[in-house]
Length: 486
Ligand code: FHN
Image (cartoon, rainbow, N blue to C red; front, side):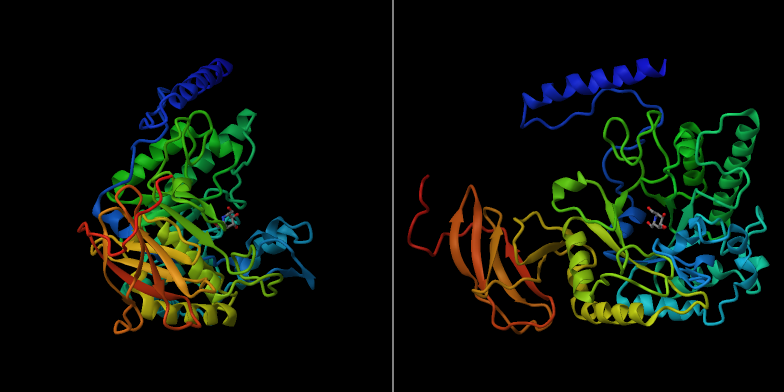
């Protein structure tokens, strides 16, 4: 039966694509597969909550849990994996890990200080790990004993974080791992026996209860950020996950959920079997960025990024390349220029302190944001030709363009191409609005657009932003020659 359904899917897609190829200009139509559990909406959400999400530009991710205590080491040995995965390491005794909660007593934890640092960095939202794959909850869940309430810390750290961040004007999103190594019913492979199936049903009920509990206990939070949804056992739960998502959305109108929660009936994740996005934004850009606007298929998306190569939770010994603030600012600019949000990860230590390397980067990004946030907040894809010197963003309300310059050509001249009929009305530095530029016209074309050089007046030591205000007025060329007719 399943084979037959796959065959139908194959035939539909197989016949549909050659047909489309005959009409290259045609707007792509969805294929005709009827899906009960695919995308429930086509195109972007247009409500106010999603508009706010779209306009954040910069966010903070926090991975904080029991793994912060060993910090990537056990018995003097170095764990080369991501610190939050240490429980799965052969040299980490499971029993020892599962008892770490008895030591969780973060004396340097100060949610207000975290929030202040995030605010100064320029973050407009935070995603906080309520429970990672180990199953330890940083809120006092009534559905398990494996929570912060049973640690020496006792208090509800999640509540402290939600309150501190919201008080300073940062929206909170809750990270939740479906994988839960602590729950007896959790399975990664599809349960086969009756007993296994019953255990997994318990686990599903537990998962649903915890999610509803989070929405009830933290009613001001804005969305759920799911992880650990790649297990075969979970992928099979198509109908269950779909109806749970509907329940969560009903409980909290406006709730934002990315594409990493559930699979369709053919096991497709993120994008359903018709290629449509499941969820409110694409959540597949983890430690990588798209290169062109075509890569994001007209969807909202976020990029979550680590500072070292692949460490989310606290690892006391970072090895390999550690990104600089200029690299991170460039990733943020690229994200916004391609219509996404950039979310930078922090991994506080077992005492609740943010490490000095992260503090330094947050400060450097914050200094840049203080001067240049206008080029990031409320901005998105500009619709102009990509240039090698950097990225162009466009303010969604004012229509101003921001030229974020990272690579200055040897000539000192930046090329910019506006749409046909559009001209430069004013051009100035965001950091020093009195520093104006007179563009040099290269050519003007009704078909191809109007192209200019901007001759820079100085060589900045930091990525610089030039503001371009355009006019839609058609203007006669001041250049007295015609373009070659090739
Ligand atoms: O396994 C996790 C990992 O530890 C980390 O939490 C990241 C964050 O996006 N998500 C998973 C890997 O995709």
